[in-house]
Length: 210
Length: 198
Image (cartoon, rainbow over all chains, first blue to last red; front, side, top):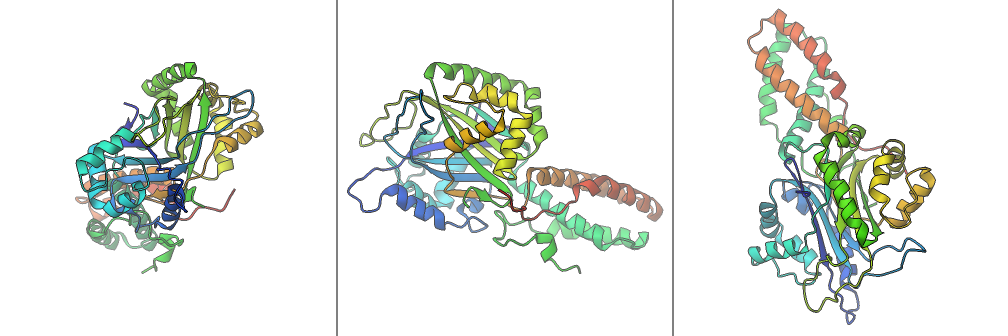
């Protein structure tokens, strides 16, 4: 199946946006305003959807005219493109969207034609599947893990680098004891925040060398 | 810029295709999907987290209500979405330099595709068919694809070392620790914000 690579699912959704000429501000513009103000770091709704690696929302205004001798043509609706890459299965992901990020989903897909709301989770899942387009070819460079295990690995890498730097030249007996303590600490250290912490600092360099 | 979040760039592109060409392209993708060795160059580039191509038939644009006008299109469309590290220019240059045969195999079915070489015409075409991202989320904004791969290797190496080092004498631990450090050192580069580029 084109949507899946290893443990990773590549979901592509095209939701037609409501066209209503009687409105002063059209739905696609309202949607763009909302998306422009949505947090992109650990405050993002996708950080709540913990199995999301990377996701995007795009208002597609029209198709592209590439020049003569090709024909010029236009879409009759604008479409909201939702492209997301996550670990796990589709139904669980969509159900979590409807239950864990309800406000966000209503605010975004409320601008789309036929959206049933999130009150009826089954209806929402069915709606999203009607909007889904099959991925023809999906490439995932790392596809055999999960978001959580990847964040854990990144944290481990950072902590180990810090430990090695700090213990350069430490006598072997002391180093062996410290290494045991390091492993214990590592097990208790929380994962990196999903979506980053919103700062532009480099995490390792922000931490004082204790 | 909303196309960028941390070290990742979100590219979207759409190109028209004559409907009779779509089955040919789907067959090519089917072969590419089944023949893993053919994906080696893409993996070796190691700066794409995820990428996808979607062939959408002119009759397949979702229609969810009677109020929504039905589309009336002459072309099928090829959608391309990529999540890559580095700048737009680096990405296109690398594609043109390393994957030009693969690119041409995929996009030659699209209207007015000029070929991936020379790269100037290719960049002009991509600029024409690309559209911007309104919202982009990245779970690990400070990490490139190579950082993720390196971190996974470090974690696996540490798990192995932790498992075997517990019963070692001090002298044995000292030797094993040195070997472990040498083994993981190439994968311990720090993650952080990306350099500024175009």
